[in-house]
Structures are given as structure tokens and as C-alpha cells.
Image 1 (cartoon, rainbow, N blue to C red):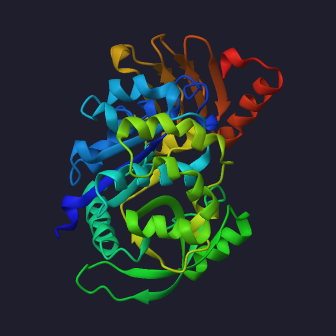
Image 2: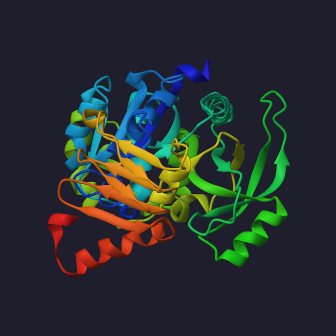
Length: 369
């Protein structure tokens, strides 16, 4: 068979992003935001996948609150391909749900699991790597993850350690056996990892056949698979009708804890395509187009004619919803303006924005979440 004719995408689009508050909120999570002036991250994710997977073979797993946002931003995705989770339940059940839905359509299917909130500058390399992973997955016995070569000692990502290299000479890309996982190490450990050249960031990019992932759940998480019996060999309409009961029976657990860390048939392909997870405003600044003073200015599309005004101000991130933002003698700041909330913070405090969200939760000011 031509494996590309059986390749599908499962796009996980139910996340939040508290470090990107106040733009990313419960009603407007970060995957629906345009943070690069090029389109929302969800739209950019689908555009990458569209280069080798047709729209009708893309499945979106999202929260029921966001179905209308998905339809508005991705009008070519068939409505039946939008799976609305009754509640948030982490990645294991979301990926299993997507895999079972596709397996009902095509038992020979290969699945590329993609997040809706990643940035990938080198799309040609992305397509090359994902096709190579899908070709290996077509053999059905392997699960494949794409690891990102770390370029700094990040403490906010998980790490994957590689073992022995596996020979797939016809692919033209290196492939390694996965040895171990480490969750979000401290700075000293992260620096030590980089020095070995054997560790990759875990971007949760997985590729597998439906046969292989169902077998993996049989081996490592049979209780979860058993609760999903009402989703097997049923119509799309019945599948969605049965989701609520399935989700009520399962506690949240990530795909890494449920499957990846236990599997002995997991391979890693290095992904050299400039990946970034836009998890905080500092990353938005790093990726943004800077003016001569080093300022990054982002405006919503409907307000493109309203720039920021900066005098003697350098290296700031300015996100305006329509009002003119004027800076005089201000450096290295984050200014994010929305109709209800104005955020002002030093760029060095970017990771701490989530503390504001936590305070709002404590004070039960849900209207700002």
C-alpha cells in the first residue's frame, strides 16, 4: 500500500495557555490567537499538515466550548471530523479517542498527532520528517516520536534520552531507540543533558498506526482501553454520543505516563525544523518581527492600521487590540492590551504571568479568566 493514502492527522486543540494571559483565556485559548501576524497557531498547524494530508483526513479533538471557533477558523474540516471532548482529560484519552475514531474509518491508518499551538519555521523539513515517521509507522510495530534538538537548557520542557541508532537507510534521516524520559529538569540537570548530545525536547509529536497504538493501550493501559469499548466499530454519530460516558470513567493522564514511558517499541527521529512551543510572552517576542529599536508590535487583523507609538523605547513586546499604545522611555517590557484587561510586566517576568491567573482563581474573579 502507499502509506500516504492511509495517513491521517489528529490535531489536539483543547488547551489553554495561562502564561499568555490576558490574550489566552478560557473563551479564547492560545491556539485561536494570531501571535505572529501570520494567522492563528491552529490555522498554521493545519496549513503545514495540508501539504501531505488532505482536509478530509484531518481530525480535530477539542473542547466542546470551542466547536464554533474550529468551524470558523477551519471551514474546510468536515463537521463530522470535529470531536468535542465533554471535559479536559489530558493527552492519553484525547489521542486514544482520535485513534479509535480513525480506526473505525480505516483499520490501516497511520496517524500524525499534532498540537494546535506549535510554531514550525522550516515547513519543508517538518514535512520530510513526518513522512519518514509515517513510513516507519506503516510497518505497524513501532511508535515514533519526533524529538527537538535543544538549543538552550530549558526547564519547562520534558526530555527524551536516546539509545541505540536503528537503521532505516531508505529514509535518509537518523532514527534512535528511546531509552528514557525526564520531566522538566532543574537548570543544572538540563545543562548536563545538553552536554551529552543524547537528549531531545519532548514536543508530544507522535506518529503511529492505529494497530500499534491500540496494542500499546492493551499492554500498558488496558483499563482505559476497556472503557472505550463503546467507541469501537460504531458510526461517527454514535461515537460522539458515547463520548460522555467514556470520559466520565477516566481520570486525566498524559500519553507519556500512560504509554510512552512504558513502551519498548518507541523510536525517536530528531526534528530539525525550528520548533517552538509558544508558552509565554517572551517566546512571542523572540519569534516576532522587530523594528529598528527591537520592539515587536502585534495588532489584531481588524486593527492593522493602528500602530504603537514608541519614542526612546527599546526591546518591548506590544500587543494592541485597537487602542494606540504610546511608550516613552520604556525598555524591555510586555504590554498586552485587551478590551477588559491591560497587562504590563517586565519581559524577564514572562514565565510568572501565570501567577496572576492563579491569584484571579483564588479570588474567584472568573470573569477575567
